[in-house]
Image (cartoon, rainbow, N blue to C red; front, side):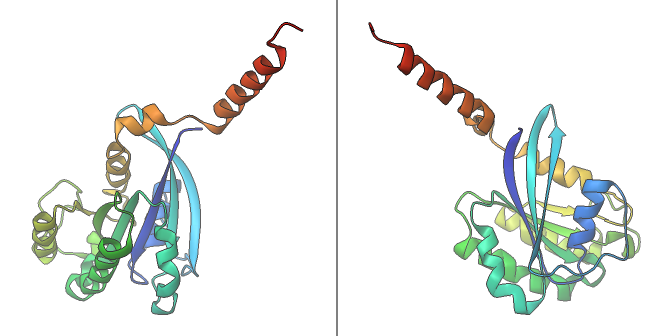
Length: 205
């Protein structure tokens, strides 16, 4: 099994978190996806630059009544994608700021955060490219993230633009040492069985 890497998606309701995951997993857009209740889990093996990880994605509910539950999904998370709606950036990012503060306050010390402006296809004159200059409507968010050393990307779950690049970046952020230390469960089980066999067969009798 590839190296597991826990990813948590955070953000207000209706910013497109579930659609983003659906686009990543199926390479399709479904405008009829229901709102997430609590959290939804899905795993996908993803390869970037010849390195493969099993992204264990937790898509959390954005409704305020679930906020008390969301923090429990931070545990052991190694990546957090804080999403907001680029088409109403000022209001939506103000709410996304809550999740950034939460992660900084109680998230794992080694968690990597990405700020994701989704629905950029609704913003006029945008290229919807994850590596292009941000549109003026979200450029101030880019400046905010640069000041804090947080990667900022733009995506469109509807068109698919920027989605693969986002998850490429997540895989690329995994330290090489993590791959070197990782040993799949089956391999550990085989080694333990071999060790037990050697212990039973060693000796003079």
